Image (cartoon, rainbow, N blue to C red; front, side, top):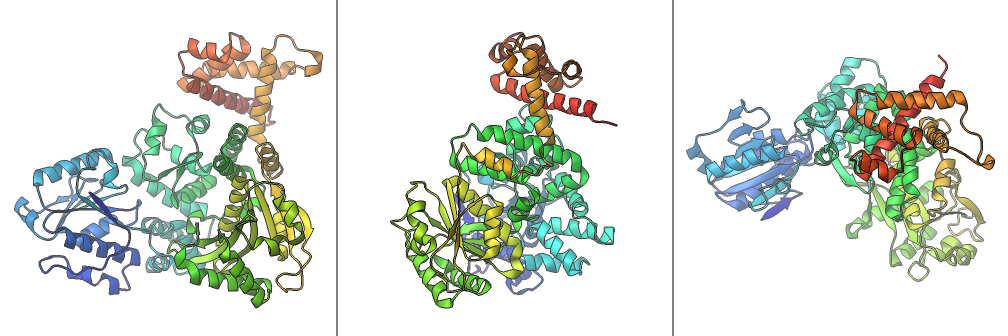
Length: 635
């Protein structure tokens, strides 16, 4: 049986509970972070309810402070990270009230060691800390666990920590808050790097120092995974096994092991790094390897373009398009869509308890855009009376709403707000028979302007997923943004529905599997297409070398100099000391130069699965493209 405490639970302590008195004063101490105090109260409540025998599992991300919590609440301490540091009471004392802490249960092997310790003890009260729930570990599902989550610190608590550590400059403290994502270990590392650096420098430098510390802490989890793998996954915003193999040398089964790391999350398009670690690794990688990062981004974008042409799943298509924009979109688009601290804000649908937030942000919207208060109230009522109210909130790490957007579904029967939003264009828009969304408002608290990219990204992703996006707004900055994203202007509405002295302008775009790739190409940064484009040219040139005869209409064969370069690059790759490179080179040599058969025949001949064969093929083309680029680049 597993119970989970995500928030603190009020509970009366039993008379015999022998916990430090400071624990019962945590809630009233200004020096104790709120997340820490809440988790401590939840642990006390769980111990109170469990009686003489209890297993409380404290779960939280790397660096959030689990060890500190265990040290505060326990009578003895077993640290599985450093076996020499074991401080335990005598076995007979385990029947007492204060629990024994077991820290560092971050792998299956350590979870097994903790289980053996509990089995030897027979009974008692235990606090066990780990980055993933024990219920997800082998051999723990049958045990009576109570899980308590220790969450990230609030921005105010992180700011207080930065000040205590000597970072008092507001701009530097903002950097610590933004990049730490509420993780005190990261905040501490950032502060030390800032104090060492002196004058304000690039964000990548302190991010690199913090990323190095995180990777060091992850070492026990990431054995067998090349050190550069996590930063690469972060830098390209997620990868499947095919893409990751094309970008780095991936040992067998490394992708499976990667998926088990506590900082990794499964996504529609593969594995991603959880925030705030993703932003940290990405900034550090950009700072350390700026050219290599741009090359990888271009190759990853081309890989996703090919995948986009094959997928029929709208949510996956939207996620891939989002990744392509992140990797290769023009600078203005990336500025509109992505913030440096993407983990700082998240988007969720407004619920029953969000009436105050909706009212506050609706008023903010009206005041910011100079709209008549009465008309703003009327639109709010129309939105709320629909089958889907369409309000989505941008919230910070404390779940405080700092921004809001309304996405009204293109459903004439269940969305009364469509008439004033679309007016004379309603028939044209609705008769197309496509699903989608109408954006009717967006508002962000001025002090949290960094949340706007998260809202814009949410809007665009919803539009691509739904197949259609319509923007109705009298606000000129939002009209300009709609035009930047290639939405077509339909015209102005007939009536000034908001009594603000200007009509709303309507912009629209339909997203289909056939036109999505072309739209993404038009949104592309002209400087981001180099390596990916080179790979495609190399692929075409190798294909031409393979053809023994060609019709004149099919175009000229590669120039002799280029053909020689291609052959030399393939032969060099096939003779590489790297087994992966040599295998990729042999595939290219057999298929393109020797014309020894088709792909299926060669995969069978080389004793490779089709998946491995095509991964090696893509890897080889990328390597040859790099070699050709080096040879053709003037010194």
